[in-house]
Image 1: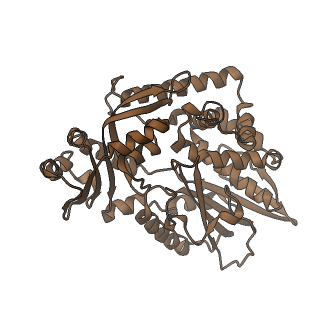
Image 2: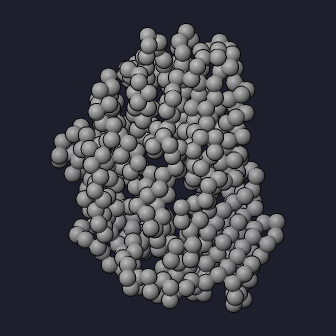
Length: 449
């Protein structure tokens, strides 16, 4: 397990760390690592807790968690969490690569100090603001962060070029809606009633539920599948009806353990999921369990547990295609735009940048895109000099054979009533301009598996 060497990421990491003392960073790092250790021990049943599993992420100190991910990636790869890290690596790299331009932005140190000290839970929003400010600099503007005032709403950024002032407001949606979190919790509760049978019979399921999970009983999977699964001896469809569709196949232990003879595989990880299920599908959730020999790789505690040999395992892909569920997960940007309008000046050229992550599957993103188009085209902006809206879509992957993959797509809207020329030639925030998907959304591309 080799450490990843990247000067740009290291430059950004060291810049952020310079806003805290060495002892503060060690304290925050230790708190994160102790939480991860507890979460993993709960997952293995060694440490008891009410929840069946805890997430291997630390939302109490998001920027600390993000820095920890980059620190372990570069200096202690055996403890690195690849799925969470894939979201951050390209962001840190972009900021580090353009550090000279970024550090020259007026007010940037105060912005980063707020990120590190004042409200570390707002990491995604502040990182998005840094990326937006940077893209205006890269387009030849003189950029400054506008100081926040307690009782006055105002935009985040001012940019000047050729004597013209532009005011920019940034809105960053959270990674997943509360509805998705509740849906996942409900799925895990349902799965708990059949997981022992799946483990006993070495089964992998692919389940699509056609009703909202919140409206179904906890015993739904048991009621629909338990007796049928006991009779299954060959791969194939178990049930297809108005409530759910379910296929089944079996774990290939020979292939799993042959791979483990030659490679160290983190537990949990996308690689282990692929070994259990025989494939990956980032458009669906995946739950699994193993009875396996494990070992720690490297010193210390945290996310450094690896699988040596698998004795028993099960897996289950899951999704919900109920129209109401799709609608609730496809969050619109209407409220964010309305709030942005209240913060923008009435007499200047103004721009809004919106950032969205796309982790809920193709159907959700298609529906979300329809909503965004309808919202923007129906907004009342006649009395506001909002000239352009940029909506940036992001998605990361951690495929087994790559450190990370990052996709970025863009859709832009302009106020045709004002007919102001577009202020930005280059618009991608994170990945190189020539690799940005524009008007060809990345969720239609094949997944990097």
